Image (cartoon, rainbow, N blue to C red):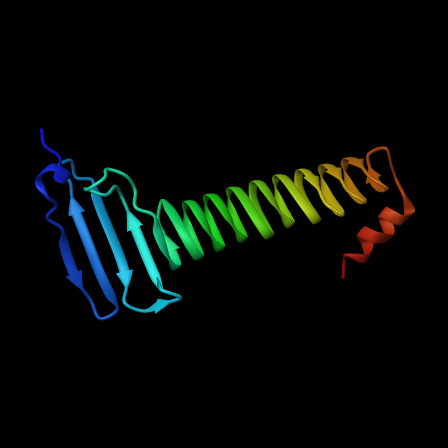
Length: 179
């Protein structure tokens, strides 16, 4: 049985005023689709979206753009299974702001495993603030919290409020966070 890459690929292309679609349907019904906008910024398409596996390579195509959406995405705003960008949303995300199952954020990370200056997640490693099940940060709130100020069922740090007691400094600090 031959593959499309062996025969040449017959894409269905569609030009729109804002960009171009490139599509291919495999005999199995699986679909490859890619949209690239005409507008560009910093030599990147403003919007690039991919879905499925490329008929030429049999692999997912990385979406690259200011806004990039795909299984693998890189851009200023990237959404995908593996996303990298200023704002990255995906199963595995790296960015200034990252949201994903595994999220490595420079400023903000939100996910099951998250890092950042501010980190929120089941396991969160924050520098300034951490919130989650197991968490770190200058101020940490979680089931197990490690921080200068720690609030949790089990707390570790300089000023701790946990099941064994509360330091007055910890209480004052965390109360100051409330309006």
